[in-house]
Image (tube, rainbow, N blue to C red):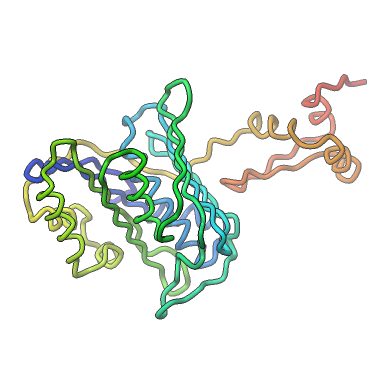
Length: 295
């Protein structure tokens, strides 16, 4: 399966569950929507991977959804990605033109993000969505998400994200792996898997760039023990915005600001932050949305 997707896997030998994500086309589409710089592409692409892995933990095909938001003091300011259990993902960065900060010749993601917080919101169809906020510990998205899962959800986890850019800044390869223990997983098994992750000779991004199957990477991490594939879900870049939804946002804008726009342009144009689609409302539509009677 070459198209973007998430997979759910069990390794019975080590008694762990594994999620994988392939997101090259998805992450490329979202970054191109926002015309991101290479540094912003790296940050947004990694957040897309992390969110795809988190959405893989939801009930497949259900209305459940997850939101990941990173707010920091660095120049990118905010990264925001949303995904649902049907594989629809959208996202943006507050500063898509952020300049790269380099360390040893590579983009220094922690410096671009800075100090701040990771917020995860899960809508599981209950009365209220579950929301958790944790401080950013490293600025490395995979590590901070693993910390969130371990501390807030009480599920010891390891997350690996691989993302490689072409020389021009577009995405060449993108994917991720999330490994989680069960309540009765032996500590020795988890330590063995952690040792295998630390001993990886080839970074995940490079393996994916070379065209290696991500399941082969997982197999090595599990010492080539048998794996059981439980299912897959295709991933796609898809926004939930609509004319009706944006119209409701228009109703919340300051009235004087709306009047100024109407006087200047005889209408109002709003853009979806996630997919950058523009919605134009003529003056009659605006007046109707605001509850005003026509002539």
